[in-house]
Image (cartoon, rainbow, N blue to C red; front, side, top):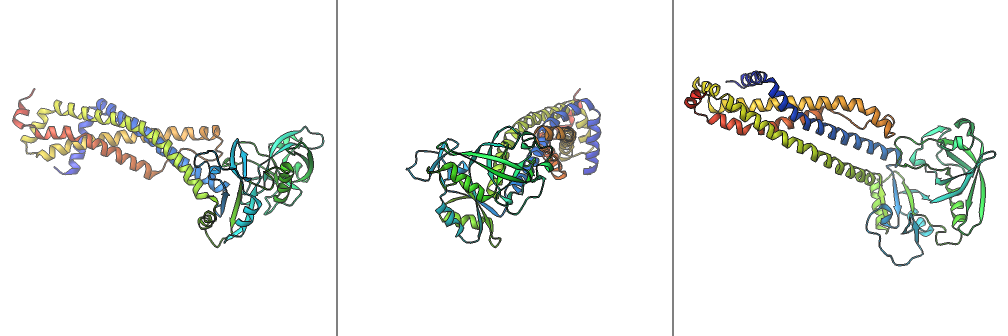
Length: 422
């Protein structure tokens, strides 16, 4: 019997026991459904992570610190005393001094160094408005902030700020455009108790995009020089004076960020690039994906034995038919192939059903998930033809393996004894 004839006949055999075939295929469909959603969620999460990195970290920049624990690596333990130690989020970490900043600027292919000051305003206000607290950010054009009004400048002029849109209603601005050119007051407080109020002109209004890495509201963006002056005043004569937890290095474009990173590490500092952040996010996604895949594989194992059981019962029920086929000249290989193809058909039907249901459910849920997780226009579940096709083929192979044992039993039946059976 030709292979195509075997495929057709096995299909007819399955159609004669529609309910049993459907129930067995549904068991495979459960595994297919779970695996399809898991793979699509992993693909969507990786794509989302890649876009987050692209939107928040300049590929030509390097984040530099003096303490590897700044990047949540290593074990925080008692350290030898140093004037560079300062408490960041309750943990003593080494800070970069102005001497360190100067050394980094001298390294090859370093175009600029932006100090990442860690500051909090005592309050932010304007005439006729209440006072509100907030952090103070250093403007970094490499991050390409999304603007609600005004344009993102290449460098922010001293005396001006970019105001986050969250402050518009708080400071009684009618709209983002209404805030442009207006003056706000930022008061800072020294650790010793003295205060200083400074006025800044709003040159633009920023909005937090869906791809932002920050989940907390941010404060106004200051020019580098303004941020340095505020930082020096706040820290006064303390050990934090003139020191920053990290700096952002921009390359000159003549060397890759990875090469500059290595030169920074050779100089005795810790450094991370966009690729490092991307790798970390992908590792987290892979761990979560593996956990969900385990449950899908458990369902698949149960389905595997379901196919074995179904096909084994089918062999027992069709003993006379098998004996007749052998008496008419069908070889052992032909009989075995018939039952293996039937098992493969079950895998195909189940995998196709599971994938189609997963695609339908995922397509319907995508907008809801994006809305709940503030993904904007991004979609968490991404279905691709190669991914679905690969999964269907994989499930067909699984059921093919499940059909080997029943097929072997069918092939070994003695035709005479089989024809005598009731």
